[in-house]
Image 1 (cartoon, rainbow, N blue to C red):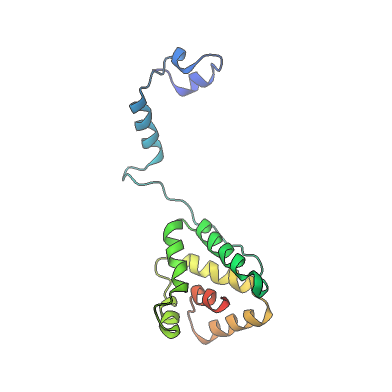
Image 2: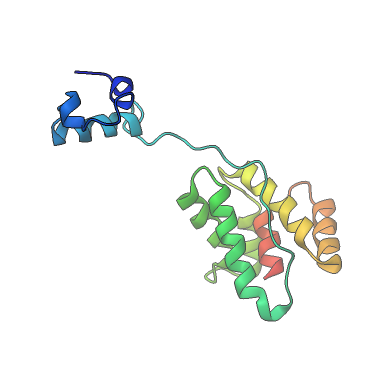
Length: 153
């Protein structure tokens, strides 16, 4: 079997003429080996350094901004599906407001994402809401950013 480098150096020839001759199953196996790690899981992706959010909008545009926040958090996470579930706990209507705020103080396995989200929300907040975030952070050693998402909605 000839190497892919040799094949690439002969662009005028078809793959079958060069002699790769991989069967369909061999090709699938090759792609699987290249795509997944030795544990059979997809390779991990790197979490983004920062979360960039648009400025908080006027009340009539909150729905669009809220969707923007969800999309940004999901796209910045190295585990986007789990981050989506984690962030949507903010909108849990099954618990009282106090229980929900208490629950949101714990970032779970998303401590770095939580910290980045907190910074992004503080940067995007208007003056009054920004001051409220800062006051909350000062009052408590650890205020989870998901609490801030709840405050902003």
